[in-house]
Image: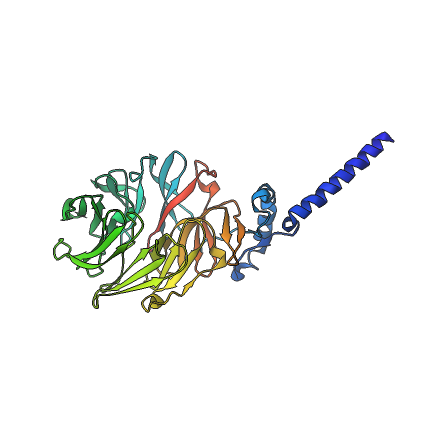
Length: 420
């Protein structure tokens, strides 16, 4: 009898604990919702269901940090259906940084370069694929390396120390040369044909000339000149460094990379994240149009068809802005709820309809109503391809990496070859 009472008391305790937990974590008593685009609801219903089942334990583990927020589970992703092309990306873990290449269908994953973490400004940084789609560049602590599409190093040259970002080196539009800036040491050009380095602009004093960008017709180079850290001036000059012409000036974050980008031979855009704006400059009319966006962003990328500008940061969302609106000074920024989440970088496809990106499994993101929602990944995806409409496709999963993938790993930069 005493044993029976103990069993009954234990049952009462378990019932009380269950009801109490339900009151505290009420939203978790409801079935998890699936965040999915309308075009894939029917075709992926079975995989989405399995994602809910496999994620239930991880959802419980994170309940203490997300119980007061609505929770969503992202569905497992289908493979990318488009034409196959090459993607390069850099992976970080606590000790190393590694450059990989992979086909857009997830095949032929290859480790290209690996190095231990070094001091700020001296780590490897990705450049981009050449405009003709035949080569790729990246920077190490003191060199710029040129590879073929499989990652074999074809050439390299000294670039000096302390390059601040990938925007310190870039291809010329004809794929024949590489422009690069040296911290407090001017702007240079490397010719691939005769493997020679030419100084284009000499820097005097503690100034920083960087982000060189050549016009599509190869007749002008735009660049950023920083003094005292946050005061910048934008100039034009001839390819040989002559005829330096003032365009405009302003203030930015300290030594900020402004992402100077040519729309055509007469128009340039750049970012100013301190003021959450995009600047649009008409060279022919010497007119500056400042477009205040009122959305947080740290990076911009122009689609190859030059029709859309993406804006994103590492914490929340990715936004889009049509260049036709930007030229009119209209800040018509739009997004898609399926694309929210932590991302470190993105790179457009040739047609401007897709982009490749990395997004972490779990993220708190704004819900647009003054609160946040908890976005849970399916726990597998590492690299993916997305559409602006929110449709998502897988490229690589954690299991695809030969050395394994843990929560300490992340993707820092990603580039997509624009030529198929």
